[in-house]
Image (cartoon, rainbow, N blue to C red; front, side):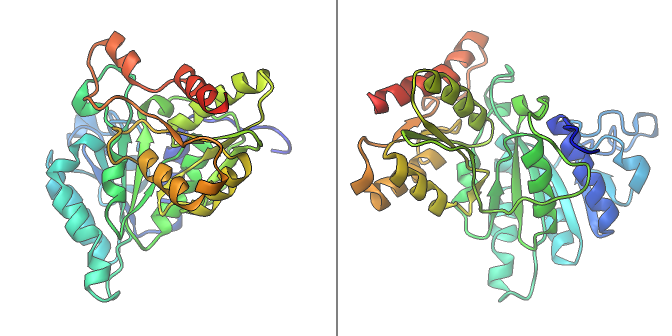
Length: 340
């Protein structure tokens, strides 16, 4: 390929890594609603490739034993994934929307998260759950949430939030190879975006638990989570045009949390804005704000500031949804308040 930059979409990157990991390891299976087509109907095989098109084409390459459509019962197929992982497979299970966690919470929080611990380490749990988050597509309250903070509350679960195609491919590979349960939160508005960076065709991994510094700076730290990292980058460009030096952290992993990178950056810039699309009460931004206040208080020139939605459900109205969701202008405004 030489120096040519290979740009692919988020969906293409995930589809590619699923294929590569299934080729590499025969114990990797995929299951979920319509991941093999239309509920097992021969005339609808591979009709959608899953609700987000992430599994398109896999049924033809790996067959029905390794790419399985499931009934519309999240408790059933998430539970089946837990059992499959406990008995030696490496299942990748799609929970269509993260808002559906309520109907399978027992399987995730009481079984997947705790079995390795409660069995004294004798049982591994190499389960990967991929799920969709994010507002902005006019899909109303039950299909637009970003409630990843709920998952981070439970010990035993690893939680990652890719920010684009490159990080998605690397984090998926790491998740599938991990012996612990990993939840991958895919932001839906980000899924159709193409990478600004080179995405290698060959397999690679990105370590779980390590944040990335997208841009180095000295005046202020902006912390993004998944899609909000893009908002931070856009805000950084505007602030830099006014002469500010902005550092942007792409969090990537919300459990475990890379506290070292966060604190090192804040101690350098002395100011921080955290951008989080989750509901504001008890979210990841609140956790980071508390971390900074407790561990870097003497370095701060201003209180940590959070950019989040209001504490309401996601509106269905396009106008209200646009007002509800964090955007670049809100990040810039928050940063200016801290800087000035």
